Image (cartoon, rainbow, N blue to C red; front, side, top):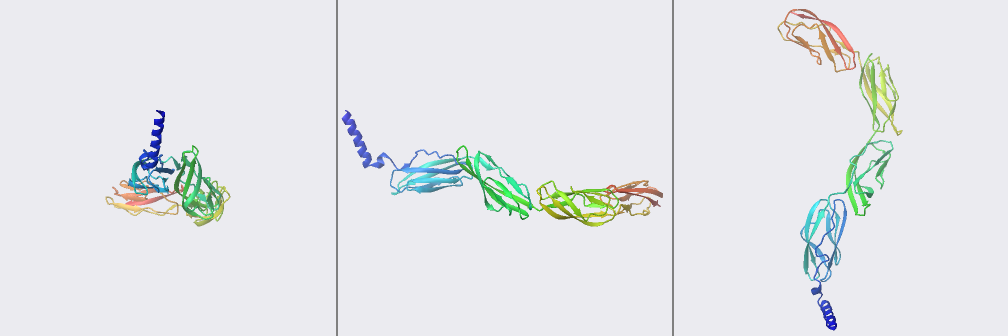
Length: 374
C-alpha cells in the first residue's frame, strides 16, 4: 500500500512538471487582492506580483480608474507597481488585466479605499518682517507625529531669508514687498506608517520701517497731543525728530504734545528705531490750523411766514464742528452738525441770537448776532 501511494505522488509530480498550466494558471499572486489603504498625502507603493504563463507579463488597466495621483507601471517581467501620492479621498475600483507572452489573460478587480489626509501643514499665515531687521518664524505641522523636512518648491522667499530643513524661516530681509512661495513638508511617521507630503502656498510681507501721526491736525493755542505710530518692525519703537511746530515737543516714545503757537503746514523729520535695532528716517505731515472763530457779524434779515435759510461758517479750527444757539425766534432751528439756520419764523421783531461752535480739539468760539424779522 505504501509503495502504491509513493507511485501516485511521483506520477502527480511528473504530470505537474509536464503540464505546468494545469498545476498553476496565469494569475496575480493574490487571488483576492486587498491593496493597502492609500491616503491623501501618503507616499504610496503597492507591488503586484504575477505567476505562471510565459514571460514577460504585462499588467494593464482594463476598466475603471486608479485613485487620482496614483499610476500603474511595470517593474519587471513579472511584477507591476502602483505608486504615487493620492489626491482625493474615496473608494476607487479598477479591473486589471494580466497578459503573458502568448497574450493569454487573467483579470481581477482591485479596490483602493483612499483615506483622508492625516498629516498637514498647520501654518496658515506668516508674521510680517521688517526691512533690515532680523526675522524668524517656525512652520508647523498637524496630524501624525513625524520627523519633518521642509523645502521651498516654487516661488522664492524674500531676499535675505532662508528656510531650514527643520522649518525655520530666518535671516534679515534686504528688500521690501510681499513674496509668495510654496513650501513642502515631508514627514516620516514616527509610528513607521510611511512618509507623507503636504504643500501650502504662503505669502510673507517685508515692510520698511514707517510711522504715521495719530492726529494730523492741530490748532493755534489749543492743547495738542498725538503719537507717532511705528510699523514695519518689532515694537517697541523709539523716536527722535526735527521740524516740529513751535510750542510742540516730542518724547522718545513718539508722543507729540504742547500748544502750537503758529499756524501752517509742517513736515516733521522723524528717526525711528525698532526693538531689533533696525532704523529708518521717515517724514510725517502736521497741519496747524488758525484758532477757531465764527465768521459772521450779523445774520441776513428774515420775513415772518416765509421760508428762511442762512449758513454759518468759521475760519480756522479743526472739524468736525458742533453748533448750538440760544435766543432763536420761534420757527427757526440751527443744525447741530451743519451750522445751517433754517425754518419759517412766525413773528416779526429783532432778536439777539447767541451762537456757539465747538471743534474736534475742544476749541470754542461764541458770538452774539442780531437777526431782524420783518
